[in-house]
Image: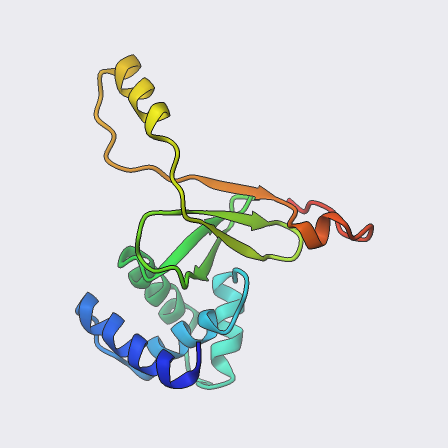
Length: 153
């Protein structure tokens, strides 16, 4: 995504969510969009501080939560249970992710094949499913063939 496309896209995203387009919020989005993998809130904060020395960690957390709630960024749940964030270029359509726990690569899985599982759960519980989250963790093809890589938890 080139800078011009990002600028137009970010403005539209924030307008659609009803969020004010602040320089710090834009910096959080830009930091995530520049990555090919996921980042922790602290990593986003450190990168954003290059642009804004006064940006605070609470500001970064608040913006990450707002952007994730709006579906602009994806929340990644690491096997260690720490939350990370990823700017998904696929868009807001329903899909899942394959997460490389070694190099942090995130690959989009556009298909959602859990309909049969959802029906089974509805039958067993008598409940109603309103949403689901599926995330696959492992090693990407690049890390799998590198003898120096290993699964990190």
